[in-house]
Amino acid sequence: MQKGASPDTQKGLPGVTQAALFGLCPACGARTVFAAPARVADSCASCALDFSELEGGGRFVGLLTMVIALALIGIAWWIDSTFRPSLVLQMIIWAPLTVGVVIGSLRLFKIVNLYARYERSVEGSDES
Ligand SMILES: [Zn+2]
Image (cartoon, rainbow, N blue to C red; front, side, top):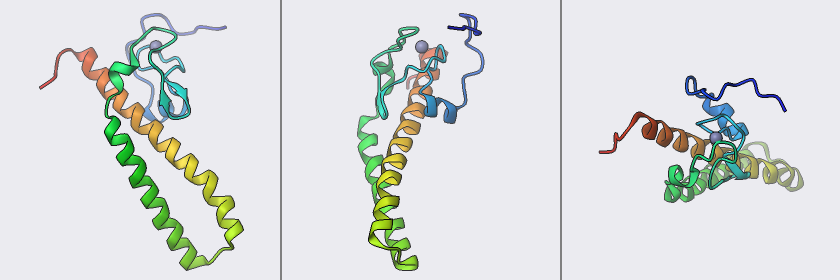
């Protein structure tokens, strides 16, 4: 168990892509944000930051999933009509790809949202 970071690591938030990939806590940088592949934990197990308060935007998540699904269907349809791959090949490609893209996008969306809210809450009451 190595701890290179000092307890006072407010400067330099990790990159959003990296944060989405590993689910890094915006406050302490621990990999604690995601309890499941695309589900945000209630709070940080390391620094007890309340994620449930920062999450929000649940309605957009459903909308986002639908937009992604429609985009994937569109791409699948285009590939089908352009390249005409076999059905088996399509299933092998699309099943994991769909899951991966949806989970990846949800993670990215939730992290961006969480970080934005966290930064706002750190900066003070900027709510208007
Ligand atoms: Zn934390």
